[in-house]
Length: 133
Image 1 (cartoon, rainbow, N blue to C red):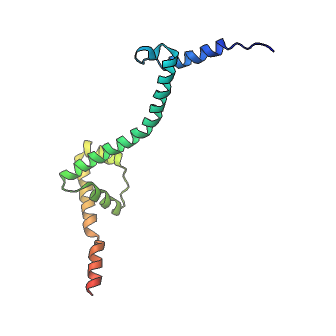
Image 2: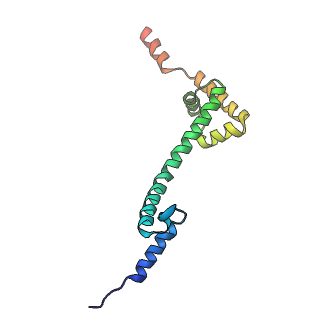
Image 3: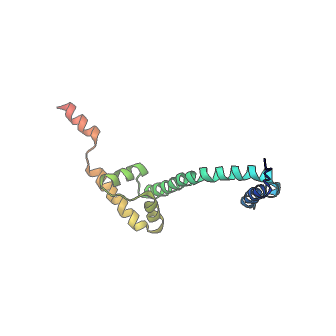
């Protein structure tokens, strides 16, 4: 049987890993074994953090919207509920941009949300009226 030598393949593999580990601190960027561990860990973090990034941005948008609503004397949840009842489908990203860049337009939405929320009768009041009869 012919002897198979894998020097070329192994070198390619090591070169690929070391290229990915470029910029790492200390031996992580120069020694294959440490670089391999570091690259695997780094890729795991990258995969996880692509999901986390979406969560963090959503949190930021909600915080911005809430802060802008508080200025108008309304909570975030009541604001979003009012928008939903008014059939206004604007995502949180756009709402937060409006709150930051054009507060006048955002205040109009807050006003609209307040009007919609106050015009609809509450469920608890309906239940109280029906039990009194």
